[in-house]
Image 1 (tube, rainbow, N blue to C red):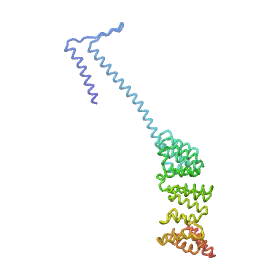
Image 2: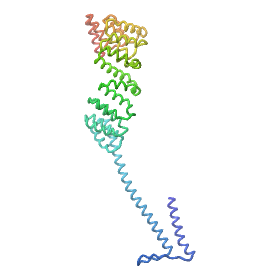
Image 3: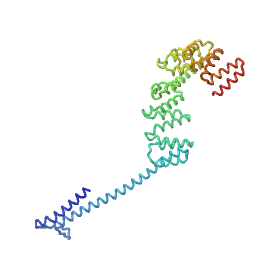
Image 4: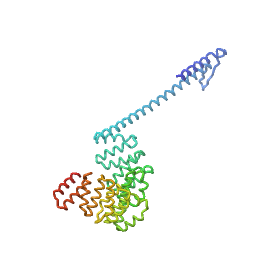
Length: 389
């Protein structure tokens, strides 16, 4: 507004100057314009006024054209905004329909969002709908589209890899996950899927080399995976080279691995599966001198040999220190049961089920009663065992 007022005042001042100046000087002067046969003669004041009018007219024309283009451009943006809002409404409607269980409605709604940029989330949601509708080809297509967006790439690749594994295409899943960048490769789910693919492909050595680097992302799952890797590797050696080769391989492992509870559990399990119960007993007793370990203790219940004196002595020592621990009574009961010492087995298993009833202990007690031809008691214990399942 101020600029307009200043412009008007300037124009008025110029007009006043042009009208008053000739009167003061006493000579209006004139200008002659000759173009061929046409002659135009006017005073200086008239020429100035004409130039001023032309200038003002040009400015008005320029402003009008600018406003016209602005109106056309604004209209285009308005229509674009209207279309974008429509896609957004469809996007939200798709999620509402999905939550309501209206899969066909969700599918139709998400189809109308494919021209919009929702950072790939619309394709991920549409893939979920397609999966629920059992449309595997459409799922793969939508996830491939979602993977084109940086923020949706990891999620899309994870789902695609899971689908590949479910279809038995382990190498394809592994290749897909290996294509992710360094940051995405540290995602816990990516690592878990890589480990699963390597395990199913039997790539135990590669997995064993990678696992220490994945300890932090895997957190509490590291022990499970380490045990799985070790078990797979040990089983491979035992099946191809025999139990002695397995023992030699264990001795050659780095001290850090031999001190890892996951590797210890896998090695002891493999010894038991190979029938080397005496070696398994020696290891389990040695590794638990400081007290029972949650991963190693259950393995002791699998020891099956005539005189497991070391295992029994250690378990009885722990029971004296912790007389209300049902896991210790249960483990000792099964060690005695497997050794044929029914009297000791019955005594401690009855204490175990009194503290915490479980099917395994009840079934063992039922077998002891059956051996003694106490069919009524055996039947009663079997019924309790099945009820505790």
